[in-house]
Length: 275
Image (tube, rainbow, N blue to C red):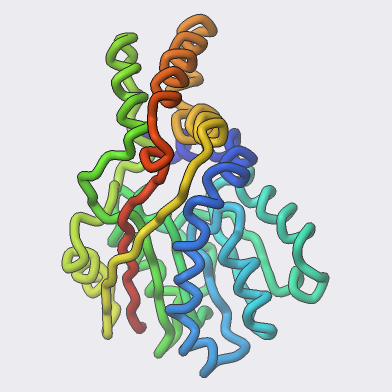
């Protein structure tokens, strides 16, 4: 899909993403703040740029964790940024909100001055970039000397999530073809290749480690998340009767799964480096 399609998807599904999918990935994403903590300890008034900020969990957590840092959240989706502003208004006091800025922009052309940032963080964004090296070099451009980068995204894993495997079976049964993926960059193939890419972007002291996203779904929440957000492009292309049949058949299959089958588990790669 083109960037415009990805932006449109998240503009329309921002509320569903924030309600259903963010709780799944947020704990793993917040580990990025642990990875840049040594830098912030040394630079208490650090400027942190959050690339692909989405609804802003990293920015909100950072301004609470560190009382002097400033965070600039950059995302191409106005819908996601609006949801982030609303969440910040609801959870942060005025001084903390003033240290959190929201900017519309893309990873490959960051609207940030050269050398103005102390740290760049990015969670679950690199999978959307067809040319990840371009986004990483942009991150290098906005960082000053001695600054840090900490990014993470999915790591290739061949273990299927049973509920989504069942959904794929239903789609085959109904002869429904999925539209192109929203994540053309895909996961990192391996930790060494992830580290090598960050080095190519101009970073030193690069380290890559494996993490995990783990979440125990309730059936109803999983159905809402999948149909309202994860599979939104597919759902939008279906007529009413077909969608109703798909939901009925998939719900029947989900009812036969065990509670362990509903435990989502997927690998992620964390990569850190210095400018």
